[in-house]
Image (tube, rainbow, N blue to C red; front, side, top):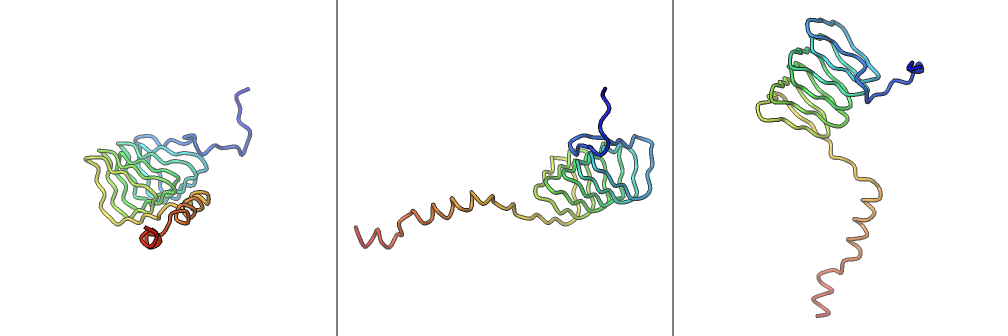
Length: 144
């Protein structure tokens, strides 16, 4: 009755937990979310969100939709949306994200790259229309 259909993983759910005291070595690839409280050595590729708990230590490059770091990450982080480093979080590596938040006490040592967000086509169109509808300053001076 509560069984999910195969192949319908939801990227919004945390499907996998690597518990405290657990060591994973090797590449980890997931279609849903991941929470790490243990240790991981190897890259992490996640279609959902990755949460690095307070007790977690990663020696990994992390690619995910959103990344939240409360533990320690040695490696690069690439996020399609946002990166949050909490007061207990430590990140030693480069980041490539749209948005980054580092809370007071959080540590980030590395380089960052942030791509500007593309405006939706409607927003671009309305900005162009606003510019066209404003009279030029020169014509105001000439008429007045």
